[in-house]
Length: 175
Length: 443
Ligand SMILES: [Zn+2]
Image 1: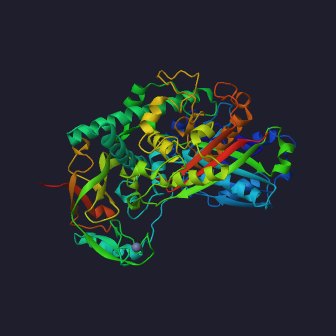
Image 2 (image 1 turned 120 degrees about the vertical axis):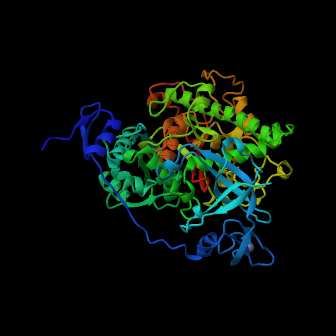
Image 3 (image 1 turned 180 degrees about the horizontal axis):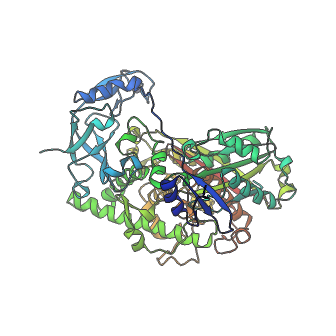
């Protein structure tokens, strides 16, 4: 067997191990480090547990926030949680309107590896009338130049739900 | 604190694994102390952020045995981006509680083990994997969401309040913020020209920073820290022994830690916890923290300042090593730590107060030297091997206070004039946990 190919640039090592599985990195002192490709993949058995109704709701075209059942509190969470963060009481499901406003936004021109092919994409924090917190979502059918804080947006839902937060997104509201 | 050591932070150290990196920093620290041998160390606190990057669970055990520390006590510390800062405080607590006389804090990260964008994915897994990550989990995107709101609250509704057209006003406000953020990037990159441990020292101009690639609007590449390989260690001990190990011990006089919700979307809208020099009336209109400010940073600052007796941070601190993962978060943190009031971060930057005296930034900085922030170059220019970063800040602050920057950097430029007291600030997630520690000259 031939020894793996030797490189002095780490970038070249990265490329070589993608091709052949191994390479040698020679540092400035002449030390040779053996570098190998080492894949790692996992499938999880993931339960949404107490948050499940939210994800089932998206498949029916509903955004379910949650509202504290303590009469002295009644905090409304736009991103639901089954117990109130303010007072600790159990919450109940609370339908949110399909329209809201941009609390903040960005356009991602790069992203994590899993999302690189989707760039550029917009992220938005959406405010709803009557809710004390906001909801993170994708914002589609618009570009960086259209967006501003306070912009009215409305919800869209996937007709082929994958039971993920990506079943919901927002677009600029039709006036 | 009696000694410390840091490896040069680099894109990759393929010829050293994590154990050897820590060993190099540890040996440096031992050489720089007197009478300090490994038998004098009672135990360790070891930090690294991500099991994904390590791909070795319980990696801290391997650091422990490589350093020959068995069977002494140890525990692994992980707290996101604040991992290194937490490790520093864990070692402090081990000594302050009386459990140990001498404790070694050691941290590392090996981020070169995956490609950059995969690394970003690993980091984004430190956001809610049900509600945040699947949308395009990307920390630069989260920080962009925060700074866009910060700009809205303080520039749109402040300096640009007079502009009638909403979109025009917001564009102008963001352009102004981008310019000021670039000043921070220039400062940190130029400071690092004199720090041989830094990964990305460079002379840049505001225009260079603005022209660097757009990553997540409005943040450009030069306004963001990068992935690194690196290690750092700090040795802390009780007062009785400190003088045995160094003629210039540094006292830890305050520790603080604060937290906030994992999800940005959950940040409630309430009142600002005030520093002594602030008034409730200053913030009547403000919903706090929202997504624009770091309540965890404010809480950490309040706790650490109270313990150290600091009531006027800008006067009582001589410098801060601040967790500038983004130029935006450095400006937001000026406000959290009370260097200026909420809303004044941009103007405060433009006074030059966080810049160093006597350095040429190609910018007018009349107040330079008032409160130098990141004299080392910070994360933006030094790199951010997560588990080592907070300890690196501790070591740089230690050398500053010992007045031995010239010895360790081989260059006296970054040495401040007789600094008495400094702060180190370590920050995790979207501000979900933050530590502040106060270090003072103890000789
Ligand atoms: Zn409640």
